[in-house]
Length: 569
Image 1 (tube, rainbow, N blue to C red):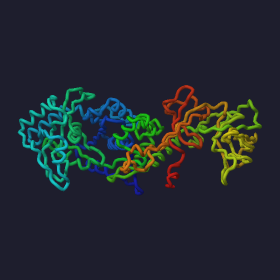
Image 2 (cartoon, rainbow, N blue to C red):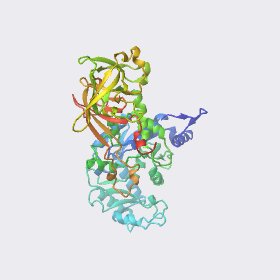
Image 3 (cartoon, rainbow, N blue to C red):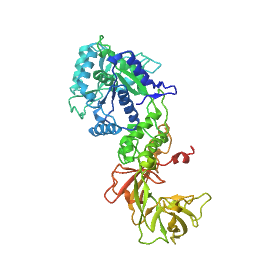
Image 4 (cartoon, rainbow, N blue to C red):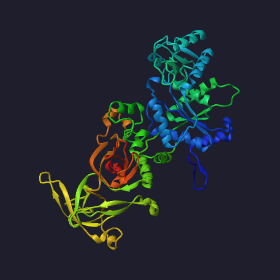
């Protein structure tokens, strides 16, 4: 994370950086900065996780500290090694590395179990036989105190015995829990004897069937931070009300003579328009076949964005722009799209691609002649940009919507009697067209070229108002192009409570075009290669590509056309 300077040259810190610098100035925790990224391995990471990753690893880098990767694997029923592998891949793709600091909450199951027994011995935890619904009712409300469990006064010996038997598998799931004994009248509902262990009889992906009881997040998280020497535990705002409980558990765990303790700091989570961030809902989309997997390019998952053609740089630049605050809000997804346009504009090779082709015949051009025209790879590089050659022939393809027989005013593309320039080639004048007798659809367009107007020749600078891209009809290669759009057709799907979120899906979020033609320069492109299709948008080669059949995904359009459609501009 870069440190921003204001107009006076002074450093401008966000509130988290200010906390960290204050702690360093006071010499807390041995002047160390040690953070962690603690994902649950129950799904694939999404763009919201990228914000946390950039903060956790970025703060550590900025202050010469360390950042751990620690999987919060405390619920074996929802976890999978597939998710573990994907999370590590995504973090590396973003450009961060945990080095030798890979940990799991399951690494500490023994220590956590011992700590739970320590709380029982201190009279600060007890086994409750009530069902979850009854426990919830007894918690009271924010304005009314809770009611003590009838099992709150159990003896230490009985609690130790029951807790041990819970872990031995003697009792059924849901029949007993271990609760911390704190304060049933506390104004903080999280202090009203929270559940800290529950019975789960399901094999763990790392520990197998060694454990039958598993710690709750509030109990495991702070203690794992403490075991690892974490100094700054950065998390999203919904955990702010959990912070007193986090501190209470740490206080019970640490020695009185030890000054070290981790500090929890909360920041606003990322909410994007036209997007859902709930892993539960994303899992539904995948399991119900409403998208084609976690890496579907319409998904906000990092693997989906990667497959769509987003770059790590564009995502990190987007996160720098939105920053970190203490106020939740909604970020317009067009800002994310703008960030990827900015980066792809700098790095993407320009090529000609016609995604809805109609044939253009230059009637005065020799039938067998092939000229190689020079095309600049990326004009943003100016004089440094390499060039490649594109074949020009008598028969070409242009975009169907680049021709109108009876155009409106200010239509500067191809129309009978009008001149346009074919990019990097000649000026041509349209002489007419041929239509299908039954449908009336234009099948061929005819034109004549001026041989003195080839790019680089004296007449080349003659001004015409329209410039069209094109490909050779005989030298171009076929391709499939997938036009992706926003997955939902409402700005904030989470707020539409009257409808199931699946009813809000955009039916036009994917259009597959199978008759596209691409210039032969792209023939050897590999999955992941990125291009700008002239006048159309930014695209990348999909992993579904095969020899002889390229498949391209549209990453983003050249401009934010969605805003205009929705009346925002």
